[in-house]
Image (tube, rainbow, N blue to C red; front, side, top):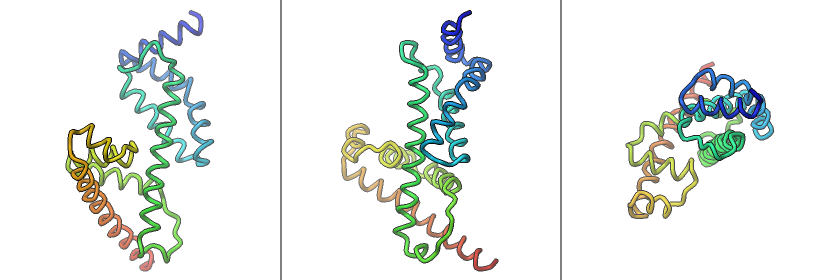
Length: 187
C-alpha cells in the first residue's frame, strides 16, 4: 500500500475509533506538532502539555474529521487553537496578578501550568450557564453581544454572569495567593 492510501486508511480507521491507527498517527505527527508548538512557547514542558491536549482533542472529535479536508491542516489548526488557549489563559493570569495589590510587591516565579489547572477547576465549579458564558467570552474570545445572540439571552445577563464568574475566580485566587505567601514566610 502506497503512503497516500495508507494515510487515508489510517484516518478512516481513526474515525472508527481504532487505537492502533491513532497510535500510528500520533507517531507520525507528535514531533511535528511539538516543534511547531515550541516555536511559540519556547518551553519544553508547556509544549509537551499542549501536544497532549492536541492529541486528546483529536481523539475526542475523531468522528467529526472530514475526509475532504487536509488532515495535516486539521491537526495544525487544533494545535494553533491549543496554543492560543494557553496564551489566553496566561494573559488572564498575568492581568489578574498585575491587578492584585497583594502580589505586586513580590517577585515570585509563577507556575502557569499549575495556575491554569486551578483556573480550569474553578471554571468547572461555576454553574452551567455561567460556565458556558465564561468559556465563550474568555477562552473562545466571543463578544458579549455574540454570546447573547448565540444563547438567546440579553447582553445585560451576559455581563452579569461574567461579572459573577470573574468575582468567584478572583476571590478564590486571592485566597490562594495569600496562602502561598503565608507559607513562603513560614519557610
